[in-house]
Image 1 (cartoon, rainbow, N blue to C red):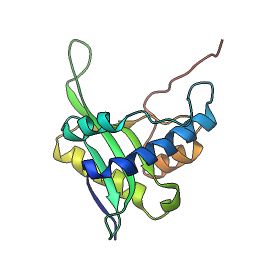
Image 2: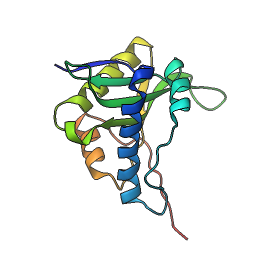
Image 3: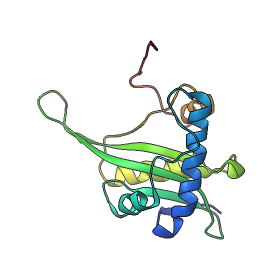
Image 4: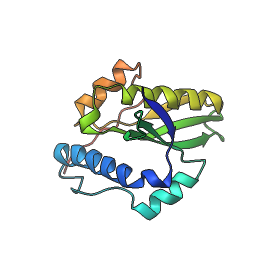
Length: 156
């Protein structure tokens, strides 16, 4: 049985390992952009992130409370002269441990984040996926996500 809960400071060592896995996927796909091996947050930064309700982090755990994956979110509030006011839950990162892929942890995290977003009255849930990660792209499309903007580049 899989459960999704808010991440706690005791989860930080496993989260750091998962962040390393994410970095290596990106590094292997775009070594011109991503250093490897590295993590985008330190343990100290993660403590601050985990304590902030504007940056909720969720973990999917098994029956033994072993962390199988994480989902980093950022509450975004738009509006102003050009944009309609609304709240977006931006999924900054979803990662399932390489050893636990295919067990449903990614889907459980995503569905939990959707329920969280609805509870918060969010208009939508968004995320970015690198084109060098076709597995992630297929996973998100399978969950029903569709592109809403595309980033493009020309390497000089």
